[in-house]
Image 1 (tube, rainbow, N blue to C red):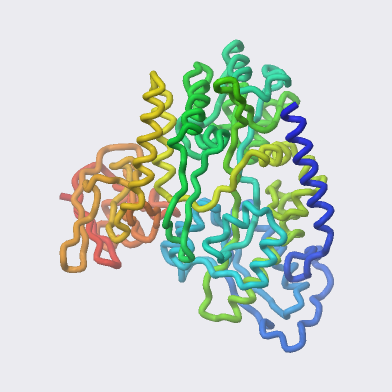
Image 2: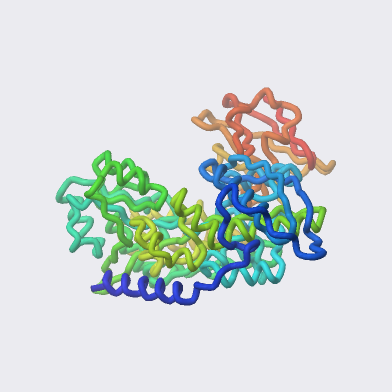
Length: 535
């Protein structure tokens, strides 16, 4: 009955959205793209200040390069402003675009795509141009509110919604899991145990998935940023009676022999009957399971006779415009960004790339609703929370909850795990943002490290230095950051002396400093460049 009611709720939302979304968007603001090689562009508006030809650099995921080129050509042919873009469209992963922008913003793309968890530091670095009032209204009126929230800090909007499909739900093997059991965590665990199958849910090692239990019981972790993207406060009640209920539910799965902390699609090929993951795994899972593939929302768990439906994060991808010295070029770029993230272009990306749209009309379309993965994601959406701006160090802090819950042998141990989490959350706002921390393999990538072992010392002459032992490991990498930050502007590209000690190929798009071999090193930052000496 619970799942039927949830489905009815989703369908009701769909019909409501479809009813209110029938108006056409302006041609240069997200209207239907013309077919390639279509009619000539309409005459520019009389006296249009934006008319002209602009050379621009665009970054998008490799899969979207050709479609993006085609959509920009459609914009050139059909916009009413007399705008023409000579666009160089390069394949840059959304996951690394922010790191590349922060290495050198001036050399970065004029238009680029990135996941919402990179939003705050891009705003802080002035790598995103603020939207004007008309563009802001367009974004708010036409897109999923959760995605709009992810592009907003304070009262300002700094990016355009691109997708709303970065969430997770449950895939299952219908030959093992009865349909009658998909609503109950306890029944699913028993099915896996009885059939010697794996229940893959990254609930021990990933904060992104761990929150499912806390959201189920009504807990929140809501971060507040100022208009510059700086974190100023957090409303977090994981350490509460509701949080205790959450970890009691969590330990049922973590302590089961069937559990594996993974979200990989190929777990189905390795003996899994259930994998909790997202739409990106759909094609691989469908190939493995074929007609036996099931996809639906997450189940409920029971504590003290009460049921709690597992929640989730709902993430997204955004498109940003780099601030421009030429205000006219900047305004033209905003027209293009609005077009590329409008209803028609989002639907094109769904049809060609299976990207889940953020546009409300597209979400309500029969085509989107018929996609099993997106349909399951929308069903889980009734229990999800938008992944807004989150302090970069929170992920490491929350990850520990899973290990401590699995190791707990009493209710007092569970309470201690929550108290430990609470203490570390509070300590985040005590971090000295003016300090410099060399975060990396040597300190477990803890960018909220409260020990002074890996902090650079102020030498009093404008330089900062650190002598550290780099232990042998598979990846001896790191970068210099402000505590709590993941900035990539003090890495391999800034090393002027000692680059021969580093693995240039391993630096990657994230600009990491990766040592060739273990040893003792002195690292110095002079405000512009890094010097590395092996002792």
